[in-house]
Length: 45
View 1: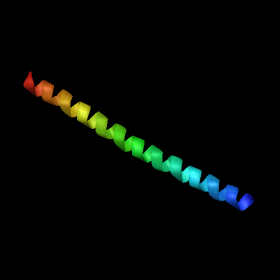
View 2: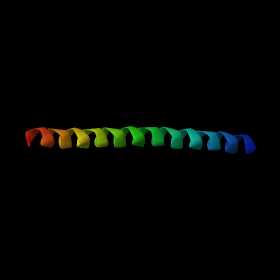
View 3: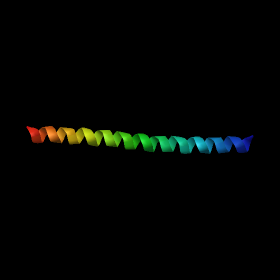
View 4: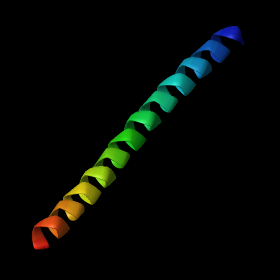
């Protein structure tokens, strides 16, 4: 029982870590795209 719980907790932590990395990557991609769009608008002006 305790062994199972430890494994579950470890799995949960790695899951959260993976998700935070994925979300950070997505956010960075969105921000970069937004900045590039802003830059294009500035050049267009």
